[in-house]
Image 1 (cartoon, rainbow over the protein chains, first blue to last red):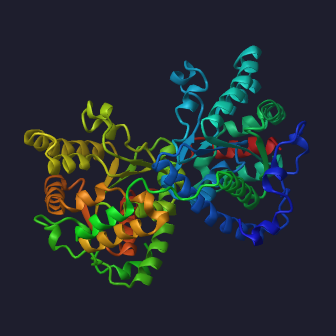
Image 2: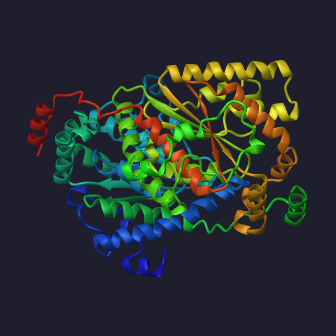
Image 3: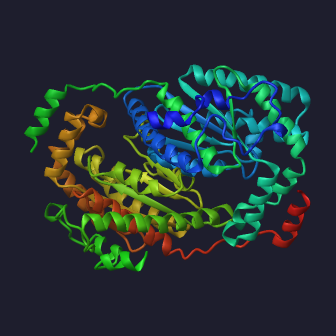
Length: 287
Length: 287
């Protein structure tokens, strides 16, 4: 991060956004820009500048993955419909080399997946060494919909929180930095975004009638998201809550969180695994 | 493609680059820009303009994939080391939404893969409906290295060409447009690029001693690539040969070929599968 960009953050992004115990989502100002003191234009400039650094760090991570390194990064994106998960993927991950990104969207479990342990499909999708993995929805969905809809018995639900915590501890211990982001959109902004999907024919495909069903249970979903934050935010895999009514801020915040995660790895360029001088001589002899 | 961009192409890109019968790669001018009459600056501008159109078409393709459509596009990238396959992925596919891209790099087959039919891992990696699949190397590698190194008997090799042709016919018949691109770099330019990898520490990880081994057999590889073009370029899945000494041209050419492939699908936006007026009423009632 450049000094100019750093000055626009009044507090380090990971401190400003980390989920606080007892957070009530109904009280969250989804138009706020916690930690960031700049305007929308500043935010766009900061995102572009941070994106250049992110692309460099991503290449280092990839280079290490190609030469025996074991580190990777996993971005877990959660949030209600229209919170902007897709836009984050397009605009934030769009700033780095597609070869370094392993993207996986999790939908409603298929009948075959339903017969497996809920973490099985998630384990199978963990990023290989050297990659930035992105989960668009994730195993956290398995304690959201089932809780609100009463699809699993309470004791199973209880066990799942603990299993998630242990699972994420294992993932971190194996060398993957886990960055969990809840994008939060207000009821009014969600209404406006869904309305756009219904009034612009090129956005009709993004709308699903179940989006309104979920709106009608907003209170129950808020409570379920709060339980996720409370039960699964740990020191090794904390949750970040990103107000997302301002798209530019949500994208900037995720860029900054990812940048921070990669920067913390402290990666230089990998040392060559061959004799450079000998290879130069062989190469020149091959002209 | 805008009119301004179209005027820079003296011939349609797919005509200018399609592999001609009897092509000798040793005679190919790898610095040429077939069909394109503009400068490097024109090329960059044309690529950006075509990229905007490509991103729009990619979103339509994705939208259809999400709403029951069956079409997809598969870009097959082949070429010797340093030909620029990675740069094409980063710069060309980097212009579209990462969610719409399914990228797969094929390396030397693992022992388990070697026990399967050579097309098995390729079938498993075909793009889902609505995606642009990208193969960085592919099943065509299975008639290159084995031919040059004599790893499989001649009759097996012969059969593979026919199996590849039938396989690609099936893939096309199932709704996937196949765009096969051979990026071709001259021996001198390859030398210069490998030298850069050996003299710049941040590029050491991209160098592999086997790159020089392959250079020493350049003649045999040229002949093997020519056999691929001769035996597997078909009307439904033709090969395009892209001179790649000028990186900007190679990236522009692949952008234009992909744009053409998506444009030919003639996709509008999918019609809604729900009652728009009824959903608007439900949505407004949920405020």
